[in-house]
Image (cartoon, rainbow, N blue to C red; front, side, top):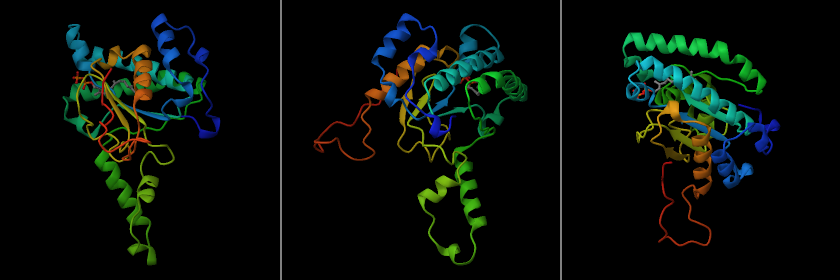
Length: 246
Ligand code: FPP
């Protein structure tokens, strides 16, 4: 989202007026330890619409408002990268009317949101029709295509794969949020989320407001990140860090 050289500790006043609940959450947050890269599976638009007896497109339209708030909040909190899962390879399995609507909505959204994007100094990268496995295959094919002579037989390294992913140059996500309660990663950033903290919330995407996002950050900061090691001064009988939702 922002280049690393411009990242500094966020000033909470950058959020503008906050609700009492948000103010309370901000007191619990260490703004110097926010995730560097947040990835989001925006799920639950259809169910949100259904609960309100609205057609599914109304849920997607409302979901774009949540995307807007999420982008703006992350930008104001100086979060370096935010990756939103907007449309996957598998989403083509939906009825044509819905995929057409989603494409139209994305076009509209991007046109409308350009001022917000520019105002917040955000750099956007698009990955429509995304699939995590396809991304890894693309990276490997690129590596093979670029190899010649002696380097043909050199083993491929993790760093080399990472350099060829669509997220090249970004830190791996520290936090993966999935709305609407499904316990799946759905082919999203399969390589990059190796050590991400996963937070599944029951909240449907259109209801995932700024307060929910701040709660997710508070929960993230409660997690003990061990990257396969053990807690400093701990023993191997210790219980693993809990995996909880909001
Ligand atoms: C899931 O809801 C959401 C999608 C298929 C992606 C579309 C997301 C948006 C339109 C949000 C806006 C984002 C941007 C960047 C424009 P679902 O239909 O799978 O919900 P359901 O599981 O309740 O049916």
